[in-house]
Image (tube, rainbow, N blue to C red; front, side, top):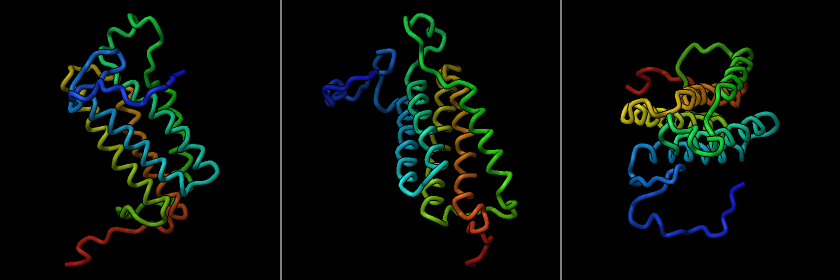
Length: 192
């Protein structure tokens, strides 16, 4: 359990932050950008939950917890040294992706077939979920960039989770628009 008795530490005042392995890195580092953007996805989903009920709210709660796990995963470099930590290192695992895929399949089975690109609009819940989707895509791009910069030192399951999450959010946004029946369709060249 984490205990936060003091919120400010002053240790970041010079532009560096601690990673979860206690090493220091600049706050502008790609690793910090990646897990910071995962935190932004999480905050966006918190806003979406203001409009969610029942199973959608429960699913978003599970995903928010997963995103904390994923942030912890991305904040720990040196995958090859996990065994040296002296405690179980928190990493994203395949079962978290499998759950998202099962939920995507369940949503897809009831959604109206997609016959056009859709605009990120509709109900307040749908709009917030679309916002979360776009931020999740940015987090994925940053995690991929980090993996390239650090020669494969990012858990591949974390990257897959972010990819699948954006798909989940797309489907959930459509569900929030009357199972896709109220999606706002893109009309190419409509305003020419």
